[in-house]
Amino acid sequence: MWERRIQTRYNSDLMVDFSPFIHRRRQLLAELDGGVLVAFAAAPTVRNNDVTHEFRQDSDFYYLTGFDEPEAALVLVGGDAPRSVLFLRPKDPEREVWDGDRRGVEGAAELGVDEARSIVELDELLPTLLLGRARLFARFEDEAPIGAALSKALRVARRELRRGATCPTSIVDSSTLVHEMRRRKDEPELALIERAIAITGDAHVAAMARAAPGVYEYEIEALLRATFRANGSERVAYEPIVGSGSNATVLHYVKNQRRMHDGDLLLIDAGCEFGYYAADITRTFPVNGRFSPAQRSVYEVVLTAQKAAIAAAAPGATLEHVHEAALRCICEGLVALGALSGSARDVEAEGRYKRFFMHKTSHYLGMDVHDVGRYFDHGRPRPLEPGVVITVEPGLYFGRDADVPERYRGIGVRIEDDILIEPGGARVLSNNVPKELDDVEQACRA
Image (tube, rainbow, N blue to C red; front, side):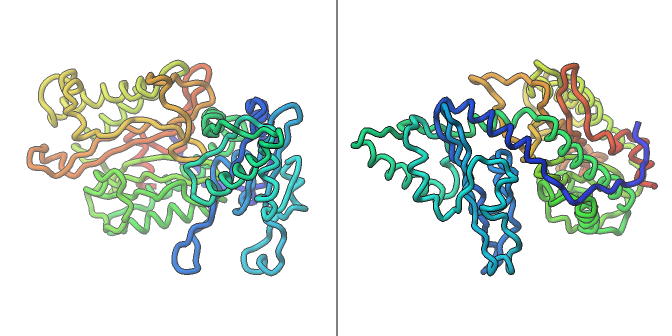
């Protein structure tokens, strides 16, 4: 049962503990089988003229380093004497006046790498780090300069072949290792995810209390963003969806510019990021504080589907199992609502539900809101394991087409929670946001 609680202040001075990053590098070094892995930091991107977008570190790079500056590279050298080498920007007092402090080579000891070098030495030293290694692990789908740097290093290293040296003859996508590590969350990761979820929950509850006829969607978006930042979140995990009325039926609606009216539902799909980990929560509620009978009927179908899907989430189950549990309830509900005719079994078999429920029920959650990790093994859905975090988010979306029952036209409902798979089942991490009908109405009147 949800209970109203006082908003919690979260420490905005996030002190990074680098020991988990050291552990991850050691684990990865053991899996390289004598190979060498090269990972690059994200590159700043230009927004307009000489202004850049907010910098966010590449998720894989941060996962292995905890380092959030651009112009950096990590090299992990496997074998009998494994070591980690971090290339980063040197100190530059003139540039630091403009852009802020740099850690610099001298300050890299805290990161726990075996060796730190200036990024200007990368072209010279990278070829030597490739020598003696049969396999290179890297991500080549990145920006062209990254591929160019590796290609150049390989060309230089291969010149030593005539002198009896060896260098990589096999190139392996590093995500095959790193993304599998990222799929299951360790305790430090779970703590950050739970912080992100707690902050996000406070924002959703505040939005329920603030929304009212006459308020604009962007005012609610501003409240969400303000609550995130006021509680220590660095940024949104994705652009907030704040859709009222028919906008709630647009899955990725982000304009957030409509004025809300009496009788509207408001669908908010929003999550913050904390310590590079995301929350992803959706709630749908009446802006006047009371569900209409038609809104209540649709909401009950979605809530029943979500509860069935959560109950299906457990070790050994797959995301397909989770989706099928939700889908069964959705199809039964569509028939009961009178939106579709025939049996629920036929509605499902014929795919007629897709008009009103067109997306899957779950995805992985972590550093990326749609997090990494394989969903299938050899073409078969992959079983869930303890430590995996997923979303569960069924929905129903009724357009204003003439053949849609009039009482449901323009109604969109989605309910989304973040779920941790545990040895005995699944734990809902986002219970701090009301979703039972009476609790939602109470939160809207608070």
